[in-house]
Image (cartoon, rainbow, N blue to C red; front, side):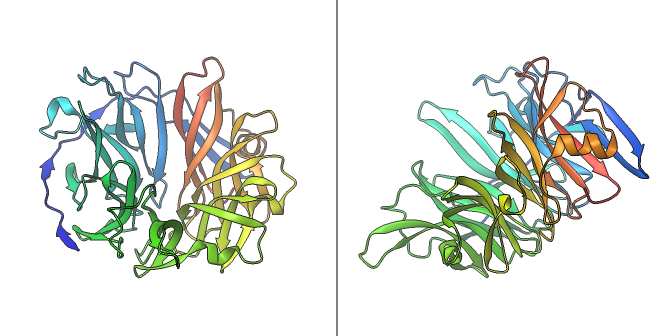
Amino acid sequence: MKKPLLLSTLVCTAILWQCKKLDYQSLNGNEQSATFETLGVLDSSEQYFSNAVAISDDGEIVVGNTDGYRGNPWGIKLQGFRWQGGNMEVLYNENNSSLIFVEFLATDISGDGSVIIGYGRTQSFHGWKSQGLHWEKDTITVLGGDGVEAKANGVSRDGSIITGYDSYRQTCYFPCYWKNSLYHSLDVDNLQANATGGVGGIDVSGDGNKMIGSRFFRDQNGEIKSEYVIWKDTVPRSLSDFLIGSDFTKIIPHAISEDGTTIIGTGVSSKGSEGFYLKNNQIYALDESTNSDLTTVPLGVSSDGSVIVGTAKTTEAKNVAFIWTKDKGITNLEDYIKEKFTINTGEWILTSATCVSANGKVIAGNAISKNNPDREVAWRIKTDELL
C-alpha cells in the first residue's frame, strides 16, 4: 500500500550550540598523518555523554546523540546532533519548535550528508510511542506509515530511499521503506494481525536497490515465522540461504556496504557469537583471518566492504574499538593508531568504532574516560591513507 508521507511536515530551525570540545591532535610520523578529536557534548549537558552513530561519505559530517536536557517535563535527555568542523548542531529542540516530539534520536545520514534520519519519541500515560523522522535543511518531516508507530534506520546515498519499521502494536515490527516521500510496506503477506517480534528494515545500499532486515512469512505448515533477509528491488531472499557450507547456524545483519556487495553482522557458530561478513554469496568469520582474542560485533563498513569497524570484547571482558581489513585481520584500533601514528588519545579509551567513511580513511565512534567511566564521548579519527 502506498501512502503519502504528509502525516505532518513541520519546520524546525536547528540551533547551533557551542560544544565542549576536549582535545585535538594532528600528528605526523613515518610520512603519514592522522588527526584524533573528540566531538564533545552540549554546554548544557548535565551528564557528560555523546555517541556517534553514522558518518557521511567524505567523513566530514558525523551524526549521533547527546545529553541535551533542557527542562523537558518527561525528563528526556538524549537529542540527535549533527557535527561538522568542530560545531555540534542540535537537530531538534522542544523549547523552540512546534514539533510534538520530546526527543529526536539520529540513526543514519545519507552519503552526501544532506539527509539525516531517526525517530522521535513521545510519552503519555499509555507509554512510549516512536515515529520516523527525516531531517533536511533544518526541516523535520514525519515519516508516516500504516501502523501506530514507525522508525527510520537506514538511508540511501542521496537520501531518497529510507528503510525502517512500521508497527501495529509494540510487540510486532514490520519492514517498510519510504521512497521520494511515499510509504511502502514490505509486509506483502499482511501478517500484522497475528505476528509477534521482528525488527523491520535495518539498512539500505547506496543506490537504494538492496535492503536488509527481517520479515514475517508462513511456513509450509501455515505457522508464522520470522527470518532475516536481503531485499533486491523489494524481492526478499532469506539470509539463511547463505549458511550452507559455513560454520554458522544463524546470522543477524547489522549493515550493508554502500555498493551493496557486503553485509556485516553477528552470527552464531560452534565458537559462539562472532562477527561475520557476507560477500560474493559466501559468509566469512572475521576471526578466521587473524589470531585475535577479540569477540567482535561489526557496526560499520566502508563503501566497497574492504574496511569493517565495530566493538569487541577482550578476554578480560573489556570493550575496545576494532578495525578489520582482509590483509591485517582484526586489530585493536586504539593500539594500532598509537603505534602507527603516535597518537595520544589522552584520558579516553576507545570502546567502539561505529562508522567509517566511504574510502575507509575516516572513522568515528565512542570512548569512555579513564578517570570517570560514566563520561562517554564521541570521537573521530581522520587519516591520509587507509588504516
